[in-house]
Image (cartoon, rainbow, N blue to C red; front, top):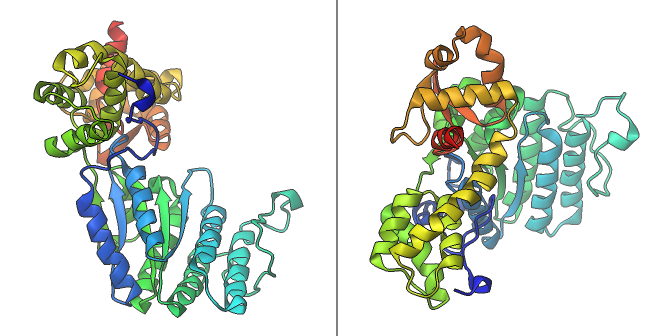
Length: 399
């Protein structure tokens, strides 16, 4: 089949041609946008899930929905080695510009507060070249969002931004990817700010996306975070949605799948969106004609697995040090060849496979947690953040 017309697109955060299985989340968010715009109380939103289930894609789709409603939006990706101030300031700068407030003086005041918030991150000894200057050509507003206490400053900043949005009957949406990587102080400040904004009825919401342990991170920061956010677990697609993710794009190109081919595709992908796109692309390129058959899926399977081994599994495995790789392999062996896609195991079992004391493995485990390759869903247990990563590691060991 013509590879130029191949509709499938595996990629990090890349929107698939058919965003299947997320209609419920999109519809619910439309309600949130309308309620917040009208001054109704509503919680901020947190999306959680494994790698490859489409959290970033959904986050971007929710942001697009906010833009269509006339909201001001900004997006940032959290990093464990970076303070929240600068990336959040850049995101809010964009959000204020999108909002289009009719009074330049009001807008300039808020932009000055954003600049004040960002530059407070740089101490007096910071070199000029390291000072943040995002193109905000207004003076810094002294005495607002610049106390140095990030919790106080963030409340003041978002209060001013929210007031600007309320003036025009719209809202501000802050979209944060990899939210679990925010620093402890920043997470606490963000929760406190959301709490304050909710109490004051200001039209600002935070939409975060992160790994499955993100709710635990938020709860450890502020006990009331469980009531502060609406948590949505983003998982693999149902069979109907997985079929739609394949059939709808093919139909746009006047192609199709046999029922047996769809059975084979679901067996191979287990409904994980990234896997569906990887298999879809390989099957399309190797199938001689439409409709695509189960035999075509079987032929294309090894090519799709090579794509996943390099672009999905291998790229993450390469980030690990030799000691961390040993730990990952031991996790895979301890989990065994079962149906658990994340290979949840006890840390004591991993230590037993390596013949070491659990305490001696803490550096490797902690480093893998920081790199986002594993997560701890409960005390004493760990799991892969990438579905079927254990199967990949066992396959590599046999190769």
